[in-house]
Image (cartoon, rainbow over all chains, first blue to last red; front, side):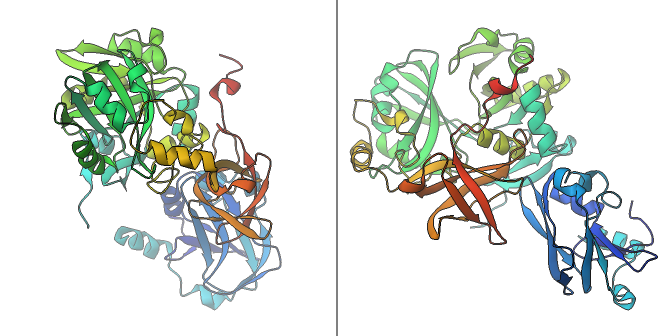
Length: 127
Length: 365
């Protein structure tokens, strides 16, 4: 259910470190399930520098809007433009085609403070 | 005051169906089962059923009940016939909306009133205060239940399940029928803009009907879809578009309060109508899928002109829609507005309501 090899936050984002040093970020299956049908995603501008702990995107469902946070510092390298027409992709494939942003310049060591898949699965039992 | 939310008689059925529950007006209600958009779309294309047991149901009886109600309700109840229902308001002396409700006339001396969940207790006090002692007033809400079946396929399936031909029942008409010895009521009313019915009866009978509709293939829809459906249909929600500080004139709904006979709030409302309201309820759409939400500030040019009362992505239209109270000069169809969501500013435009008419989408029935 919770893919191995990714880093997880208590705000239910996941981060995946690619071979080329890019960090891909999305929201977890738990998050998409809790939000319900996703109807809109507000994406940041490419090139924008995002400070650790700040919001870089907004995901809207029928009922509410939720901030998506970047746990570590990074610069927006790519955004998932497919989400403009099909935001429900996040509901269908949160860890795959439903990725939100790709960041450059994230410190590898900063990711170590995040949860592993096993730790996140344990964390979910407590929420 | 924190009290645990109440359960409707269908609570166990919702849990069994895997519903996500939320507190709504003091009731633990299903907000969604398999998803708001799926439930919304199913209601627009086929049929869904809704647990509406949380709404209040009052029985008013006695000689002169019609005249007594006529003084308290804005609806022209004296012109109604047996088996007819009519929408109207309960106003205070200042013309403020205490509630919006539907009055059902069995006969001149016997009526049923259907009110909102959140206003039920206040309504009970108001009616007990305002109705003369010659009529009896009974809050039947706990003894009875209510469910709605809505959608283009609803009348056909309801006719089968109820063994009553509801297809030939006129809009805003109702009839009484018996099922397994229980007396039930079915009306051609609803809160989705679609064809549909609302059924009332003793609690066990409504629970049995819920199971019967499930067995007939009708799937439940929650409050999430109920809200997007009513919003698309341009229907107000008490506590959002209507409250005690708002008159029917501001809501653009004075046609439900235009009878000749006197009623509580009439003078205040007439004065308000003559003076012209400073603000008006209007529909708006945004330029994208991004939605405004209740409480967002509305601007026209640089000036703040109002506030959003309801806002949502519209599953049928694929853009965001909503209601706002805005100053009268800005409340003109076509007027561009700016809505501050607190995160960013959305481009919006005043549009007519209903936002969505089911007939338009029924090119191929």
